[in-house]
Structures are given as C-alpha cells and as structure tokens.
Length: 355
Image 1 (cartoon, rainbow, N blue to C red):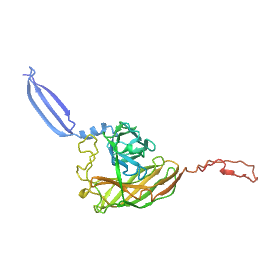
Image 2 (image 1 turned 90 degrees about the vertical axis):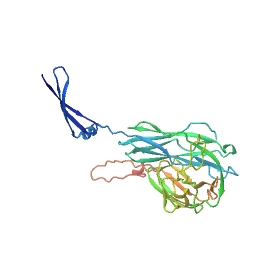
Image 3 (image 1 turned 60 degrees about the vertical axis):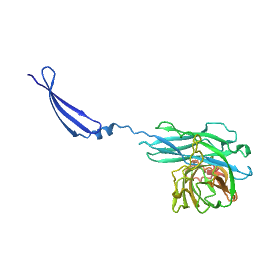
Image 4 (image 1 turned 120 degrees about the horizontal axis):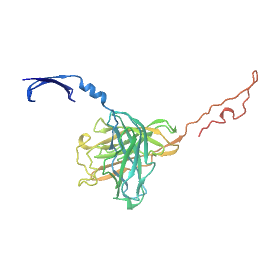
C-alpha cells in the first residue's frame, strides 16, 4: 500500500496556528493525522492589516423642557440652550466636523435663535466635544404646552455621518417665578476678540437640598460665542460635580412616545435623586463673532410636580464687546544711499486695519 504525505499549515484569527501531516491510502482514504498547535504571532500580523477609522456618536446633554412665565409671557427667559455631546468612538482622528441642528416637526412659536451649525476642527479617538444651539420661544400664550421635535446631524472627514437619537423634542412648560432660585455672580472679560478662548463663571443658588431636575446657564448668543466646555459643582449632594449645565438628578424620561414622558423614572444620577444648593459653573468659550452682548443667567427646575425659574432673571448681567483682531500688512519703502527716508502720515498704518 502506498502512502502519500501532505503537509498542512493553517492560521486562525485567534492567533493560534495549526500545522500537521495527513497520510492518504492508495484509494484516497485517510490513514493518519498528526498535528500541533502553537502561537505564531498572528495577532501582530492581523493588526498590521487593520485600517483605523473614526466613528462618531451623539448624545443629548440638555433638558428637553423649556418654558415661559406662567403668569406673564413677557417676563422671564424665553431663550434656552439645546446641546449635544459628540464623541469619537473610533480609533482614528475625525476632522472638519460640522454639527447641524434641524427641526423635524412644525411649530411657529419655537425656533432657532442663532446659527444652525457648529464647527469643530478635529476630534481625537476617545475625545468628545459639545455643540450648543439656542432655541427661542415666541412670547405668546399659544406656545404653552406645545412642542417641536429636532435632530442634530454631524458630518465631516474620515467618518460616516451620524445623527442624534430620535425621538427628541423641546416642550414648553409654564414656569413659576420663585425667589428661592437666584443669581449671585457672573464674572469674565468684558472686551474680547474673535479667535480668543475665554473663561466665564456663573454662581447661583437654589433650595438647599436641590431639585430632581435643574439647569443653570448663561445666555451666550451662539453667533458670537461657541461653548467649548462647562464644569459645575454642587453643594447638594455634597461634593457633586458635572461636566454639563443640566443636572438630571432623578433619571428623567425624555421620550415623547413613552407613557412616563416628562417624569422621573430613574436610575438616579445624583445621590438622593436631587442636585443643587450652591452651584458654581465655569464656561470655556471660543469667540467666533463680533458685536455686543448682554449676557444674563437663568436657573430653572422641576420639583414638587411643577416647574420654576429664578425671579431675579435679568437683574444681573455682563456686557461683552467682541471685536475682530487687528490686521497688520507688511510695508516696504526704498531710498537712495545716504538719503533720509521720510514717511508721511498715516505712514505704515495706511494698509492696516483695526475693526
């Protein structure tokens, strides 16, 4: 009987290699098998063929509840921030990101106040950036208890276009003015230039024990300032911190199709299901436009089955003037040897600009 030997070498993606020999009989039957397993560095070879890609995920970072004063639509806040967090969950850098806000349903009394896009130069793997838009409510009683759905789309280079989770909407509640919420300080530079990154601080106070839902924010016009990040501390619960302006303490249900929509369903995100007390928030913003802005602050909350805002809204503000950076243009002059060069006014400033 003849035997034919065939030597085999096979690799598995797990990094384990198999090699062996098979002896075949003259009629083709298998008479024997001998093999051995071993690690031959296949994981390293596999890694060499992997192509790094960016991948973007979007999450909501502000409260979907907005509102007008319950007694007078001309009082209190009517502009509210709507923000998303954009996270690069891939293993390559995403570049040229543009976040675009769009309403997906109609409501003439709820609109954008400011540009619908936010630009982000790049996002490294594992990093995130926030994009804020301003929503304005027309000061009319017809806006009460109405809503408008929206979505944010992020496009750019090196990743597939992503959209924020649906369904999400802003809902106009009746806000009760209360003096237990108040603004204690707004600080930061009052003269800034386009391209600068600046820091502003907001100090507020609420009821000592805090609330199930609370959001404290500065009314930065989004056409002049791009919010880069926020950092908040609370005295209730003790030592609590947050990297968002919205404290979802009780675990809010934001899904308009849910039977428990706009209620606390858990799990709690802050110990005891409440947050507040003394709140200190630091804003890092980039100056992107010129003009003059009067920036004030609002605090609004949900507690005891009703919604409230600070009765001192608008009483404390900071006026910020933003200007373009001066532009200097090179100058050149010639003169004969041993001859004094005289430059008449405005001289070297003639081709420069200071908007």
